[in-house]
Amino acid sequence: MVLSNAYNYINVLDKAADASWTRNDVLANNIANADTPGYKRKDVQFETYLSNAVAGTDSLDETVANIDLSTLESTTYTEQAGLSYRADGNNVDISTENVELAKNQLKYYTLMNSISQEFNRLKSALKTQ
Image 1 (tube, helix red, strand yellow):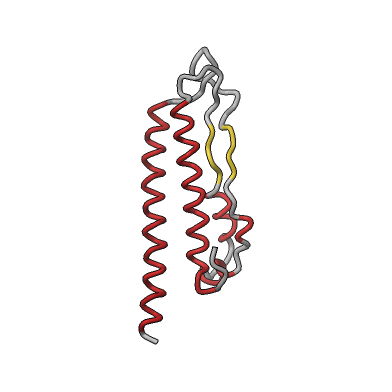
Image 2: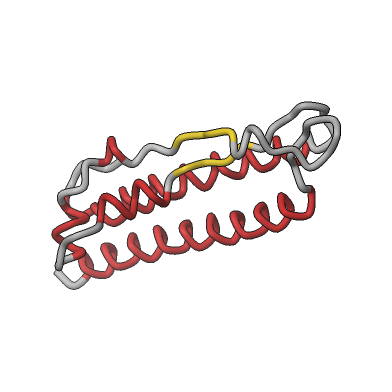
């Protein structure tokens, strides 16, 4: 994490990328346990925290500048612990997990691209000085 106002967007994108990386691990674990009796699907909560952090202001720049990055930590939770798709108590649907994994990988690569673009903007601004 870079502690400068010039890096506000990068810091937020970094937190989002960390959450996406964590979600990738959780989804891979779900897939690995698709046949484990009694295993319950897990997921990662992050987007709600980010939405809450940027909600209710008119200026995104000002909002991002004032975000408390410590509130943007992802949390892992067990989804619908009481629900089971099978008689063995497992609630993992392998097709859904594969789709979620592909979706998350696209999100991660998009976040990495956005971070790279932010650094390129800063680099361009420094060159013109």
